[in-house]
Length: 114
Image 1 (cartoon, rainbow, N blue to C red):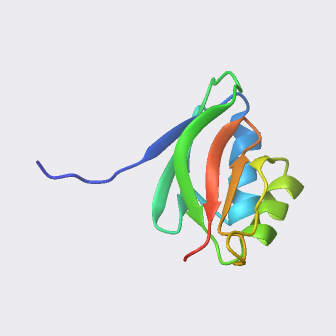
Image 2: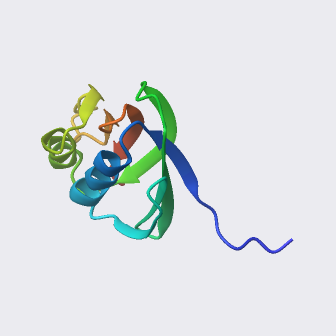
């Protein structure tokens, strides 16, 4: 079987709001939008956002690596998202993890390379 592409799909109660969140927070590029679903490219990965979601808190399994987790978490909040777990120092090292959620309750991790 020839796999052409892999895409991770999340649900949003407000497709436009969710799309703007990923664009403004992470610089994701919209590669396709139909009014029902949008596809965004982020660091070579494809995230599909499908409208019609319930806006409930949902764990996605998405992990986004950034250089500075503290600054990244602040941007998540500034763009309408939130934190389930704030970045914390571990063993005297700078924070390497923040548990976040987007404007539609989709939870994801911000991590830094260790």
